[in-house]
Each structure stands twice: as structure tokens, then as C-alpha cells.
Image 1: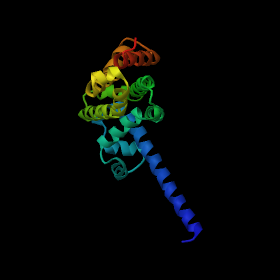
Image 2: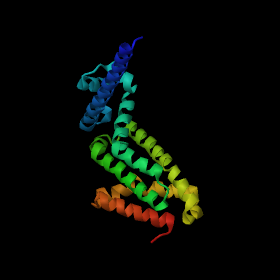
Image 3: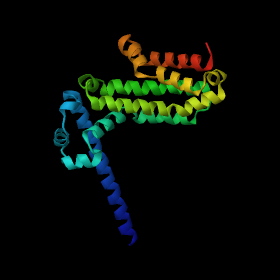
Image 4: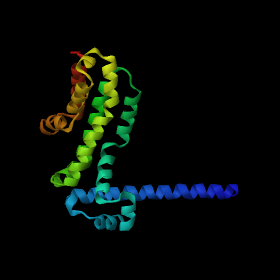
Length: 211
């Protein structure tokens, strides 16, 4: 195979990949709109494929099922570019206070995105067992993602070490959860900045013993 053929082949592969990515994003955009307008349970694969201008087999090939589409919609909302940026900071952080402040930022980013991106969808799909199952899965993921930060805190902070790893993980998971955000931001009207600042100081006090 000559150099021109190799170059053309790489170009074709890249072009197909870009088209597939564009198709995937279009399907997710359409699905999110339909889920928000009608509720998850009333939307079918055919509805999504028709609105996206692609065949149903293409949708199945990319996502396997409606649940797969819903999971991708929710994950895209939670773990977007802003999350990726802050998560990278968390991976590189070693100072305990910085870790806890980054943890508060991660919580704020995820929960702000949830409110802005899928809040209405959740409202019209509150009884959807598919959405409930996916949210439960993502809570498990969120708990797992905090493990490395909890380990570092226990290894480097006396208060955290005295509490023990299991208790530290429980405290992180509880304070950064949806219920606390809902009560303070959605019900009491706190701004996201106020929530993040309070959460950071609360975690520092609880896990580092600082006032």
C-alpha cells in the first residue's frame, strides 16, 4: 500500500468516526428533548430515530436500547467537559484542604448540570423505573469516584484517620449528595456559589477538624 492510499484510509476512518460521533450527539439531543416533552416511558426508539433522521437499526447499533440512550443522556449531562476539567484537578491534588475544596466543586458542577440539563426531564419522568435505576447506578459511580480522595485524606489527616475510611466515605457521599443540594439551592434559594463555599467549609471542618 502506497503512502497516498494509507493517508486516504486514515482520512476515511477519521471521517466515519466524526460522522458517527455527530450522529450519536444528534440522537442524544433529540432524545433529551423528547424525554423532557413527553416523559421517558412514552417515548419509543422509533420516535427518537424519526426525529433524529436516522434509522432505528442505527440507534440500536449505537445504544442497544432506550435505556442505553437514557443512560447516555444522563451521563453526558453529569460528566461533561467542566466535570472532566475539575476531576483532572482532583487526580493531581495532594493537599487535603485542596482536595476537599475540589470535592465541593465537583458536587456543584454535577448537581448544577443535573438541574439545568435534565431537571425538567426528571420532573415529567419522576415515576420512570428506567430513570430511577440509572440514577441509582450513577450514585454508585459517584461513591466509587470519591474513593481515592477518601484514602488520601485518611492517610494524611489525623481527624480523618480517627474516623476511619468507611466513615470518611460516608460523610463525603452524604454531604455531596442531591438531597443537601436540593434543600439548600432548590428549596431555600441558595446560589450555587454559596452552596459550594458552604460545602467546602463543612467538609474541611468535618474531616480535618478545622473551624
